[in-house]
Image (cartoon, one colour):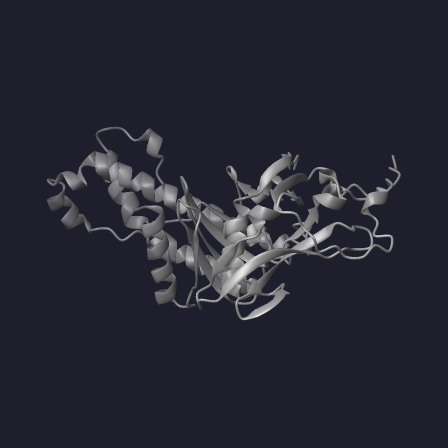
Length: 154
Length: 176
């Protein structure tokens, strides 16, 4: 039996709104996951790509990350983590210090979409491509902070 | 291969010896075995345990190799965030690492596709964690994480010496 497409919540639409780079440390960030993304109790670092794609709490609900008109993410779960936890400083193998910060990257059908970028001690502008060692350090560190908000069914 | 659970007490040493002779595992030849059986290290019980450990290692390695082979069936966006499937170079590097690890009798706990594009071999023991990622770019990166959650990352040299150095480092980290 054909299933009618669901309607995207209005809050998800950008509707001409500007970027908002003001993140509160306590603001939560959300991301979807699959059961196989976990090894035991821990989220696998290998399943956390850089720059990580997240939805911000200020403009979304947790279940927005698993919304799809076709239902393709229906059985995915939702992870959460605070901006404060995700904003860390790490020193790579060349002694370059990176500060990781959330960056609002709104999409037309997902206004809350954000990513984590890195500011290096050599350049103040955030970049989605810090050194490969810094990226892997961050993925490994941050993946251990993610907590399950909604349990995945597949 | 012999059925381990059907061995009877009078003949199991011979069967184990025969099985070891046809396995790929390097083991003292039969004359050495006859002399060294006086030593407790080569007691019947230890031989059986060692043989079972080798069987278990071979099975686990085979399972991981099959899991890596299966990754070629993944398609673009398999992780729902736009990840590419592991390419042939990444899969081959992961398989080569597995062969080195089997030789060292130290296998990863799992092998999974990486969201960065590639294959990740992971090691877990309590609060300790390590992994090696063979990326589609051809680069191989390894990480260890201590009890405080601090990651140490390094690039792995793509040769046997580089592989073995990394395996020894992770072994020391996971099995101190």
